Image 1 (tube, rainbow, N blue to C red):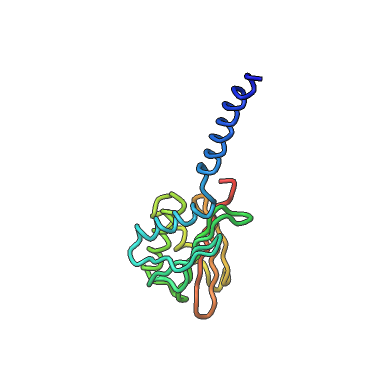
Image 2: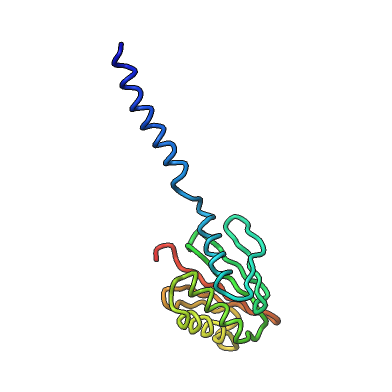
Length: 158
């Protein structure tokens, strides 16, 4: 009978340590999205975090009418959405390039080139919706009579 308490103590200690490690080890998935948004805010002048709703973080910046960061969709791991006037200004392209470089960890000139190509391809010949792939990024540009927008994503498998 004296052996039973000795066997239980190490087992209970191991179970308690396992429980503590499990509760403190892994952060939630939304934290990664929030961390990316905070990094964007710290590195891009004029960018503010306006609202966080689950998998979407809405951002504001003077160069864009709408700006958001989406995390973990069905076909993508992370998404950048930006909307501006029909004829985007250089500040808009600089914003998309800066944000894309931080989010997707690729050089800023590559994101600048891809986003400007996507938006400039829209017109009479290709229409008001253009999808393209540039440097392992999927870009989809659309425009209406008053606005132009770009969605930059990277697939889950990349």
